[in-house]
Length: 305
Image (cartoon, rainbow, N blue to C red; front, side, top):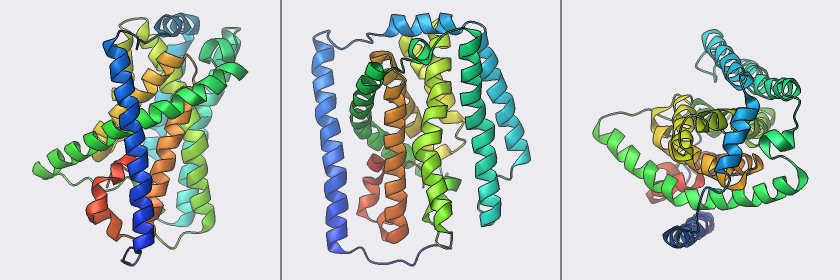
């Protein structure tokens, strides 16, 4: 059941506009700095060699982990209903199975992988005390730098879909989040998955394992692009395809530049936090989604409607 269409109070609208403007303006400023550095030859994928060595470190066990995750994912798709909002009990069961099946397999598989290769999280993924602190800062910068591109890409992609007569609708979890009638536990569970479980598990797979393995076979840029294509495609949502590719490219670049998985995990969590903020705003004031502010909503991480 959708929320009643309430008018947006002027103070709330001003606060939302201000927040989005500050995020986009900061991102544009960071992009300008990066372009200047790139023009001077000072903006490089500094850790590309390290990422390739990590691909070698993972050896034959990396593809094994990816194959295992693919099998679990296909199995879950065949078992679970695609409509996760049938009722609250079904929603909890679906989210629990997805978390234990996909996210649990990713983390558990990585633990086994590290034991088989007799290595540490620090050596394999750059997750140590100093690397993590620096990675978090890289992640924040990557998020802000990507926001303008994600917003522009989303608007252009939605225009193309509209011209083609394609109306994919919201992602299913987004639909649940903007609906009323669910208990607080549902929203807390979705927030926990979006801010903690999904960023860590997905970045572990796509940037921590897949990207280094791809970097062994091609250039870092092509490896980032290939991992981003798969990342976007596996969300199975047409309206989010291009925005997620842009986000995935930013996450991959953050990892290659920082050498720490903490960077893409942080940026991923920030994008998801922006999505939740946008969904909650639409839940409170549905007029935001169809009004003038809808052009800026992608900047808050809300790619699919």
